[in-house]
Image (tube, rainbow, N blue to C red; front, side):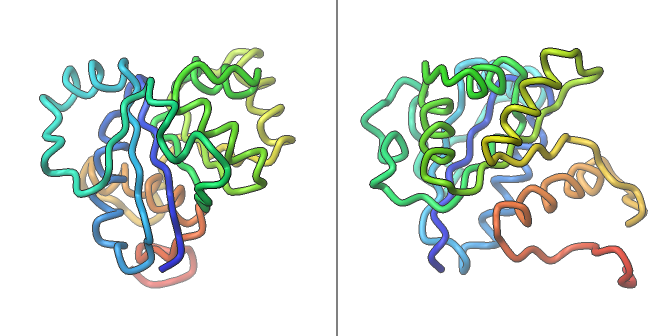
Length: 188
């Protein structure tokens, strides 16, 4: 129960990834010391368009505003273990790759990288252009993990939520959490 994790949700299409990620984290509370959440301004707009209004009262984690540079995650001394940005827009990914910390999500990602912690980016974009690929390469070289929102199908998901969970479970595993779900080579 030592994991302190930051969840960044940006304005890329695929708000369902962020929603199900937050829901899954509730069930993993035994592994977590703290969960801090930041929605970008665009994330709120896209979430409302794709899923309806955000019921922040139902999210049992601390939610920070994207312009709150006094939030704990803006400093390495806060000791966060990992950060997942899901979904991650290409704009956010590019700003992180360029070292531009113009909001709390990009600042927190910069802090996670400088502290040599786990940064998992879940881009939801297709197709990728050369700038996207170069930014992903640069971030990978800096220590981040790129986990595209490319679902797997060998678990034979039957619903959209089950499809999305194949990505969410993978991102959580990459962030160092133990997640129950389908694993290749097991029956399920």
